[in-house]
Length: 459
Ligand SMILES: *Cc1c(COP(=O)(O)O)cnc(C)c1O
Image (cartoon, rainbow, N blue to C red; front, side, top):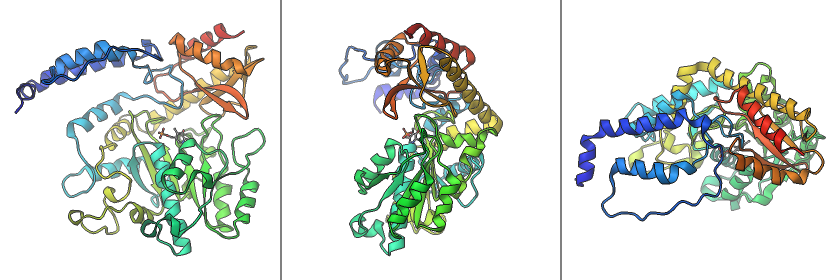
């Protein structure tokens, strides 16, 4: 064995203890670290032939690279929809690496059964019936991709074509209809060979991002019975608007379509009695995307994919190999998602749900919603800013009063301050900024600091 590796194998407990202390210090200091650190220059170092050992590697990392890492896991990072990592989820994540399980089949360990328990807990959290099968994937993009791949296979089934065998060319154009789809839907369409141009953007309701269900019905009518995919949105990134899922699901009585719901973070509305009605009808979907590294507050990368048609899933993602055996009614995970070998993503999810339960996670959701509302009220009352949409859930979408073009300059100043990080957007043609609340650590004091910064930058 390479001498240094042999030595570190004897010092394993000490080494892991050292890294543990270092990580705990970082975690404790998250609220004080600059929230964003753009455009750093870090002096490079070449790969050494013999290595420097884990101890020296930790010091080199801490000296050169760590200072430039953002506070994205901390309480005032409000860009994208980012979430954080609960203590229990970090514990689960550490164990994921230690056990290093590959939950592809149930032939050698209980890891696949463990995943099934975590997936059952997730279905319960979102109020989904046992008719939904579930799989872990790396993020909402991959979950949307799987959902669309199932819709593609389903459309083939309607027309007597096995797309997984014959290819998409045998099916022809497959329209995807959606009001305000996330960019990852379009990316998935490109990957799946459906093509970005197969997207038909359906008009939304006035001053909303929610689809106009009558307009959707008219577009489906115009397809004259040809199968399509409808992507309904439960929580848009700009204004967290929700399509009427029940009304859309009802349209399936009149038109043949696969209903995929992108509920990447909107699904968490189900945990708050005041907002649960927004996701009414979610269970009726054919496939559902929910991100876990956002509002569940587990570390990257993690998402879940639900579907009522596990049989189609195995048709698409079947990984036939002599040593893997026949599929049966309950196929191993290796036959259900794009990956073959995978990380045991269930561990952080299982730990955080076991540790805090439904009530703990509902509390994170409710607090984040209250904090978004508070910042929204502050900006609404401030002469320097104007809300671009009401604060429906956990995102505040706003612009500069007067000249909205000023948000570019504002955003640069906000990022440079290190106090918070927001992401720019364009909403209904107007440049704006979004502040998204999804971290368990964020408090009212953080909102006050963000509000004070925005006040100081207003003209
Ligand atoms: C974040 C998000 C996605 C993409 O998620 P990733 O985790 O970045 O892959 C898709 N849809 C919606 C609505 C999202 O908010």
